[in-house]
Image: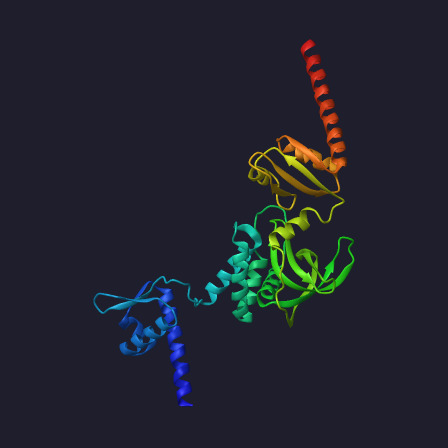
Length: 333
């Protein structure tokens, strides 16, 4: 029993030492000994224990000597006090919402790890701060942070998820899936997962999910399509009556700058052209959108889009004719 008590005391002391080193740049050995209530020899032993765990603790020269926590080849675990933990979790929630380019997925992984070890009282504080905070961003659908964390954990731990899902017709069905990855387009969040009941890969909009719960059923990961490409195709094509293909006489990167991924998919075709793939139920809107890109374009399919483009051309020609007549009348006046 005495040996167990000594190990526990030593562990607690080493964690306190780590907290000191993370709180301030440098400490003298005497200062650490005074803070921990131990001898200089105990401080040296505890420093060696931290080094053995992978923490880069460097000795500093000078009167009295001392220690500082340096940068290592890998990032060791951090000790956060209550205020730091709340601030970090709130910041990760905001970053996971897509306000920082490229940070959303990494922030979500970090948030899932942090949320797993937060005590209930701090988790409640994080939720309160997050709920009282608004971000001035483009239009989109707000997703509950708890839902993101639940799905992120399920993806990480390879456990099945069960939820109610509202289809496009509004009817809700219970779904059981094996989640792989979440993908955000900037306006909406999607989950790519294997639908167990339908025996097929599916994408699910997070804003249509209800009562999401991770089960205890572990699954073996399957071979799967690239999540970003799969969700991109589903968002741009699957829900629509028409899937249009238009050859655009411009570099693919220039077209991607003008067409968001939730609107259409751009396929590489060469330096001078690319193919824009867009799903739509409104071909007149699509014809105007393609014309608005400002590049020469050729409709590949469907034929109905050519008819919509012809209607647009007639309307524009009529508008131009009326403008010319109006201009002549003013000149004559």
